[in-house]
Image (cartoon, rainbow, N blue to C red; front, side, top):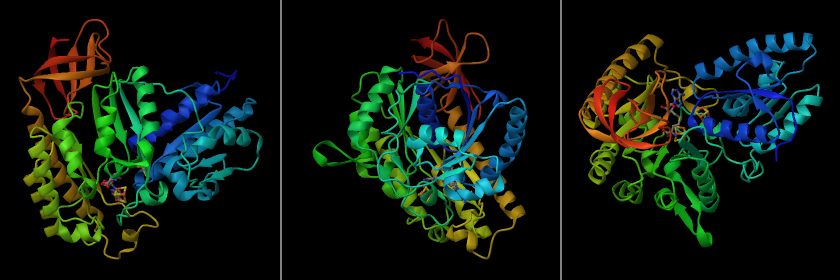
Length: 449
Ligand code: SAH
Ligand code: SF4
Ligand code: F3S
């Protein structure tokens, strides 16, 4: 039921896919309350920034945005219009009242585990002169209370199945911003997946900070792992593709590896962060596995699914990292061969153990190591893409491209691919012959729909 509400909102999302998912859910709840979306902040009665705390740059960006939004809020006030500014997400959780102290124009600070209270808190913020800070970790499921119908903006839909993290890697804020590991029950996920499929989703991307640690309540109180969840979701009519991210090497079960060989809907792509190729660094990071174990794991995954595309995350310049450690990361990358990867300079985060280590790596050394690593990863990405030149592969088209008649889709290996087509190909899967390969995308010609 849509309520009458002349108000509009502006929502900006930073950070990972889990934030994108949360933003979609917040947008659905606002739509149910009759809000319309605007991409012009100056027209918005409600501004929500869904923030990320993972690296310093991401967090600082929020404050520069807030500075600009404050000016707009003041200008609107002079025209007699009120603006509610809300900060959601991981900066909200990590900094709480510090946010309103630094930027008093903020009316509402809401952590990721409190979104079910969003409508109520917005209503309170509209009448309250004092800002509200809500960063509790309630035990129940945050989205259960929102009850707004799911919508899909793309044939590839996000579905958060697990949240939080109990791993406490020494560099990482996630266990503090998202709380303890929590898996959503299978029945809820199946219901949501069916709703997404009915709304046009063809692909499900199962999300979790540690998605392969998933252990949700299944039928008759039994606990179900990620592999079984995937097998069950693959049964849903209309779901052609399934992906999942982000996984931890420690939670890569034999069952999940087997699913890559057995479940046709499970796409041949695995994002499995390792962070470093040095055992000394892995121990200091509290990753709880060694580089050789990762290499062995990859070999087993490749045995199950030889064509699998591998992706990872790397941190360079972790405190105490030497040239030899950095060299070991390079050697690991060469040994594995990645289809794509993300790499970052270590960013000390307040409250995490690594931030307190005295021997931090100088910025110029970090930059140099990052450049070297990224050059190698880019070379591997290009090489991976070149392999499919001339092949015909099934592509799920997600949206229209910029050129007339152009569509943009993904190969099973998550490669971005452009092809021309008639009518509307969005949501359709077609065989495409790859005619051109570049580092970040491919081009092809549709051979059969
Ligand atoms: N749960 C995932 C990662 C979540 S955070 C895992 O265990 O791998 C996403 C990525 O951000 C991490 O993999 C890491 O590479 C990077 N990251 C996290 N904290 C960081 C920090 N303090 N500085 C730089 N990069 C960081
Ligand atoms: Fe952060 Fe480590 Fe948890 Fe990943 S596993 S979210 S890097 S603490
Ligand atoms: Fe950032 Fe929070 Fe995701 S810190 S990466 S938005 S879990």
